Image (cartoon, rainbow, N blue to C red; front, side, top):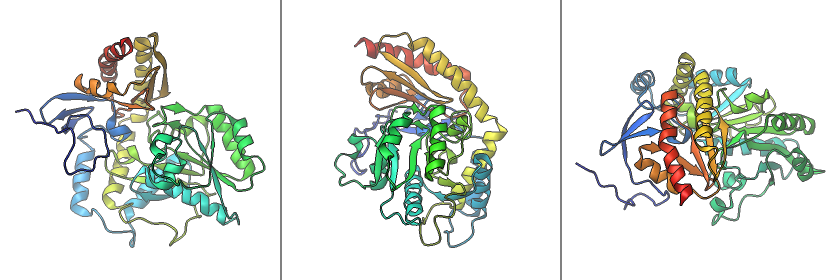
Length: 398
């Protein structure tokens, strides 16, 4: 029996332009809708489902946790918070962690750290450097830090205190902050996600680390989408051999269970004190168990290496299949975070790909984004290319 999916829901607020399918179950990198149709998941819940769907090691661990504690509140010690914090500190080279529920909340907390860091030094109006095409969330503050006028439209007045600069241009940053004593931090994504899968160059990241040290600024790296092993290292900035002062995380950290974190180094770890910041749900035992188990399974199953190896294979295959087509501007990214930029808007590909049994997204209007689970195999990577190629060829021929 075919289930009918309404174009809009009569009771759910109309905030998403949805593809007209309803997914019911998943296994590995595949999902099935309510009609039984199978899809290859090259989106991973937007870089969230690190371990794919129905993972044989994750599900029993979460089932066990449900029988113990789901939520207690931060009035009390939560041992699993300490476990997950230790795992993140060891892998980042940083020192302390605050847990929340999402990437937006992690970024909001980072901005609060930056402001209080400035106020603690007597700076009345602290300012934070942010980037063109950046995306940090949809709260009023993170929206203000975001570099997308379309998502900002209708929500003014925006929060002040941001200085916007272009990516990968250290001289532009120097000019924008020259003789400005109010600057306290630089805030950026190692690889911009919503902005179009735009990587920061390694030499730029190294120049930026040096400049932050010289000026006494916090280096705050939003690893919400590009972190947690997606590029083949735990955090994408680690390819440049640097360590940030503040690092928001979320998305892949809980393999689908909502969890966010702000990891801080010594320069920022003690800025927030009791009463300065908090959360009701953040750091609850279920979310913490999801984070602990995600990291354990990633290491047991060698998923960082898999992301690097299969990602390189997928990117090479995409270049071979699409790179020479007139209308394909660039195939870029790292590990299993890949963007294919076309010379025309390609939002229509999301629905067409779903019809062809492939889940993808389009970001920045003309960039096909591929962020599958980190368990993806080379055979599945080849299948992504095989399903996507004719759709791109047809779109470009229109």
